[in-house]
Image 1 (cartoon, rainbow, N blue to C red):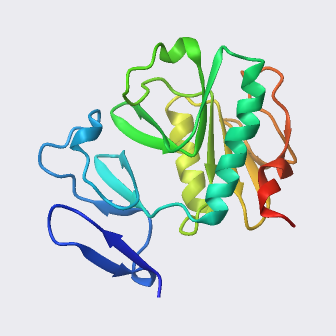
Image 2 (cartoon, rainbow, N blue to C red):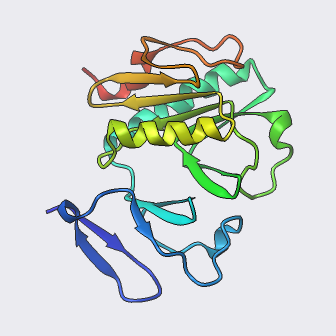
Length: 201
């Protein structure tokens, strides 16, 4: 039985995953301020804040971990020749129009974000990368891609590890892609199957 465990200051809760649809909507605790990470509830998993609601997802499983790491590596290699950009991973947090999202990988223009401050970034990245997890389907990730685009992100890559497919989403279209590029990121061109290198055949 797959279960989801919540740890909070109140009584811990365990739920059978077959009864839960993700992302799970949580009530924000008293004193919650989305721009201050210290006011967020402590849970075993991932949180975002969208439309006035906290959204909960479980920890990343193996497919998602490995593909996200590969995306960081590939984009990081590209960024060595392009220091005017920053590549971020590990649930790269951003607060845009008062809402908080966390991309699996994101690329920002260094000039847009300024120096490090130990806070969520407040400028939209040029590229956001989302990798489908155990509890995320195509519709869920396409909805998240639309959120990114509506908040100033130019290109979103949606990677689906089990299918070995990547969708490139822009304001103009959504397409399955064999070659990955992103507007505003010069010289960036990756074979989509490179993201899945660690998964084997």
